[in-house]
Each structure stands twice: as structure tokens, then as C-alpha cells.
Image 1: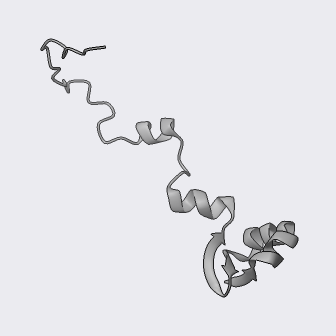
Image 2: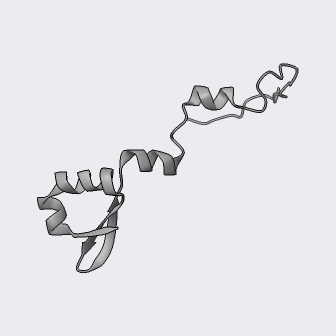
Image 3: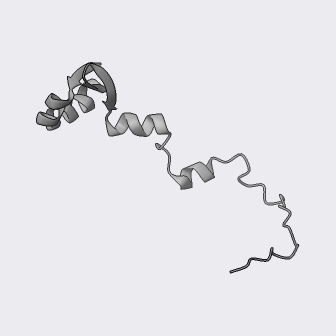
Length: 83
């Protein structure tokens, strides 16, 4: 992982972003201490699990096609709220 001092990262931001996209995570330091890491959008999505749409996630559900499942609903009265 390449390390950038904060001043260099600010001055060469577009280069920093290109390096993150092509070479992987880029470390940013202040006074020699790591304070942040810049990663590509692709890596970020992969790490966060954002590669799949909600529709695809629901279609892959193990409960898909089980129409006989019934979810119980609380039939009690709603709670009282003072405004």
C-alpha cells in the first residue's frame, strides 16, 4: 500500500484517486500517523456487500416460493402516545 502525506494527497488528489483505482488502497498520513485510506469504488462495494441489488437479494432468499408461510401479526391495540 502506497503512503501519502496529507499535503501531497491534497495537492495530487486526482493522482491519488487514480492510484487507488489501479493499484489498490492508498494510505494517508499526518505527522507520520495513518489517518485514512482511499480505496476504489469497486473495492468499497465488495467490502460492504453492495454488489447485489435488493431485488436480486430477495430473489435469492431461501423463503422464495414458500407461499404457505404465514407470519403472525400482533392484533393488540396500539400504544397510547401523549403529544
